[in-house]
Amino acid sequence: MGIIGAIIGLLLGVYVMWLVSRRKETARKARMLTAAQRGRAMEALAPNLLEKRGFRVLDDQVERRYAFTVDGEPQEAVLRADLLAARGGRRYVVEVKTGAVAKPTNRATRRQLLEYFLHYDVHGVLLLDADRDALSTVEFPVRPTSHSRIGFALGVGVGAAVVGAVWWLMR
Image (cartoon, rainbow, N blue to C red; front, top):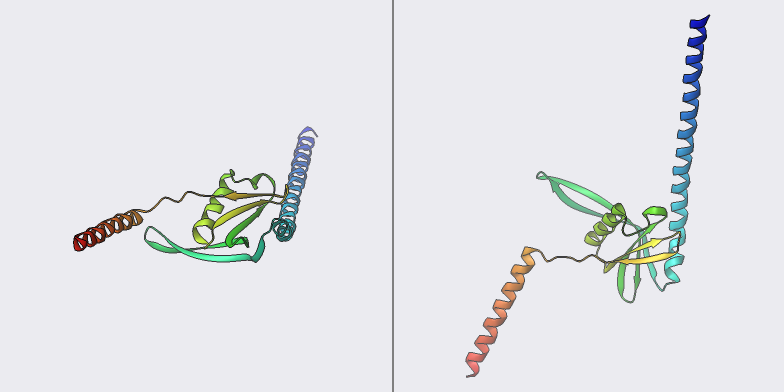
């Protein structure tokens, strides 16, 4: 009877562990679903939060595609911004976040905002923390490429040549 009792106890233990893990997984899925539902609800409130700050919402869920290459192979990425808004003649991409990721210092959020800044034709990027009703303007310093430095140098050279020619002709 000792071996049969041990087997029954073992099977009962495995069954209880399975029930506990299943319950934890169900709770985790419920929390995730709740967070997603909450995020959608906050996105629906975002236009009102922006309008009370003087912004006009131009569009929502705006897609942009851009091309890049990986080891010489062409790839395509699709971006989807929550909102496009305008104020004072300037256009902005608006990302609506809730919870811990609603901070520009959050690595994933910051990278997402940078990607929006680079690929949407806007003046800036706004991060709306819908939980706190806080709006942050996020700016990225853009370094000139080597092509723009060459263009600048060429412009200075041409400008100097024109000034020299005008000076020489006026003597």
